[in-house]
Image (cartoon, rainbow, N blue to C red; front, side, top):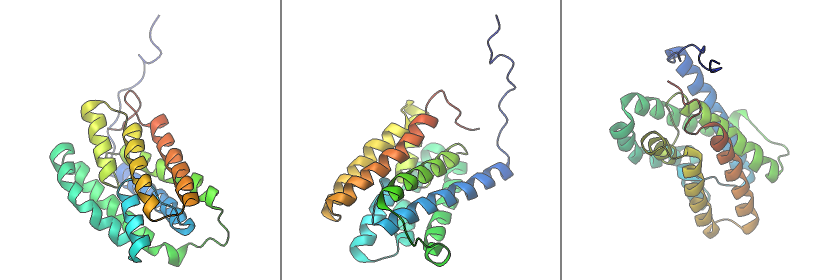
Length: 207
């Protein structure tokens, strides 16, 4: 008996329009999720988490810090994942930085429970990252590293993200109260769960 997948057509490469749509939608999802985190006084993992910590401690713009902290990781992206990935990642990081900076002028939350911010914000960021990763783009150093390890070592990008994000959240104990830390962990789990279920070796990765 023939395999059910034997009749499937070969995968088509993404067009420029496909990539542009994914970059816009993915970065909007990520920016909205991060805006919810910032409103609730939460953090997330990776470079965004480090940017949140510095922003809370100094009062500097999250968007600016997020853009600057990602600069050292472009070398790894260029060296290991190629110029196309690096260019799309640069655009994605720039868009998230701009969108989060603009958010206070276009989005407001009259009532946003911290638990909702943690779970829904994590899911939004997770699906935003999923859209970007499937079009060979990313929004941060940890995502670049996770994508590299999945492509080269076949490690789950979601598991790599979860481990590193957990370390960032632990560092937040120096800045945030315990309740916010616990809610931030909940957000990390929601985010990483989306990636672990939908972006792993053997699943659709995008071409």
